[in-house]
Amino acid sequence: MEKVETYLVDIERKLGKVMKISEKGPDKMTIKDMIKMTSKGNSIVKTNDKMMKEYRALTPSESQNQTIINLMKKILELQEKQMQDAIKNKPHFDKIHAAGMVKKNLKKNEPQGDALSDLLIEKSSPFPSQKSEAEAMKARSKKSFNDVMKAYEGATGGEDQVTEAVDDSD
Image (cartoon, rainbow, N blue to C red; front, side, top):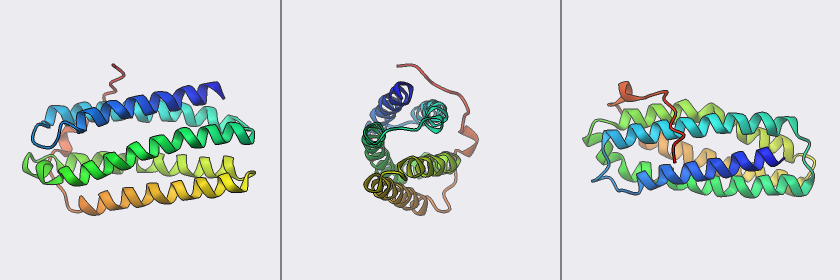
């Protein structure tokens, strides 16, 4: 359980670093910043994979599972903000020919997000109120993702800049 919590706290911290870059605002964000965000995002994906492996192996108590849900809610709120920023910044990303990069990165991470939501629901199943909470979180996540994908429908530019590099630096 401790590893799962540690990984979730790491994900929240790393997402905060991505948000800090994003909060520069569209006028100051460069392709280099976007590539850095991608590599930090790849680090989040890697950490999330480790967390999911540990979580899958657990049979959490109700209070342990609530702790996980609470941490994941914080992460979801940051992700929703990131999606809103992506929508808000799309005109700038179009201007610097990088909207396709954003779209490609989002699509690349969709399967993991779905798997994580499903795992949270599965682990919450023994606890009806937590299962409802997990289902509501999945719905919020899906809505946020669908909204940003709708905004980026047909977006092109920068797809060749998508990197698989992982930036674990602080």
